[in-house]
Image 1 (cartoon, helix red, strand yellow):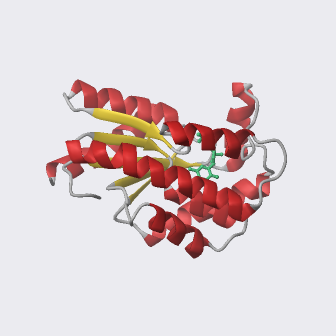
Image 2: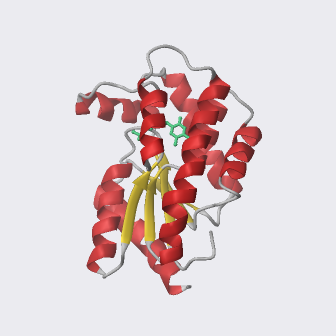
Length: 211
Ligand code: TMP
């Protein structure tokens, strides 16, 4: 992405697809191999971002779709400028839960804003920064909902949306992966966590070898 030697990996997918589990497994594997890893997330990967996260996920009542898109973009701008960019400059491996593809999928397809405009907004916010690898954990929203129900935690504003919202989000993620096959690795999130982790490790191994 930037001038640094780091590697930037983002994980995407619907709520309940298993991003945290896969980030944990990837982080342990990389740390065991002696790599320096930064774990981060959007929204909320910086102090300013925590404040924005609280608004976008927990504000009671509606937020206008364009305001919501701008809040995510503001979080992203500050996060890339102050957290991700410096880590990549240092040569760290950044494992990040969600990035601009989430905005295209959730604010674009989910909230029905123009997908290209939402993407351009984030690219403006981050001066065009794109990850080296984006792992898309693809899962039927019905299965994801069953997993979230089993976790027995209160839903945030997005999780609480109806099934058809999540069906549109899933389709948007898959379309993004088709449009950028070199950046995306699509995995079936219904597979076993170990099986998925192996597939991700293989791709990361290739990326590290190619550097
Ligand atoms: P998570 O941290 O549990 O993944 O929750 C973040 C929620 O925010 C999730 O429902 C997806 C949503 N989201 C967007 O709508 N747009 C975005 O740009 C990002 C990063 C997340």
